[in-house]
Image (cartoon, helix red, strand yellow):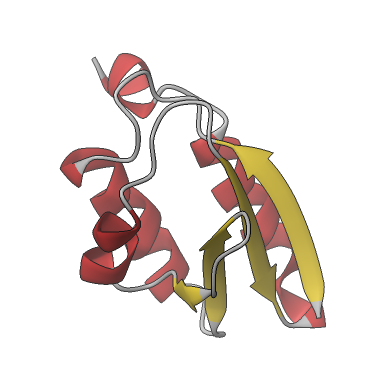
Length: 90
């Protein structure tokens, strides 16, 4: 399994709009991807309800995990989390 650790950059955290973009990319990956807050169990990254349920805030550290064939998708997801998605779409 591959893991990527990153920090939520969006100033308001992973609220509805960024979470929807994130979950959509994870769902389109064609492989299971999980996301976990530090010290907590991993959940399905492709489910907006699961991702929203984490309540991720600005500056929080998360770990993404997927199979060995998903390196490029994990890197894309990390890039999303490390950018201010609201700012870049404005």
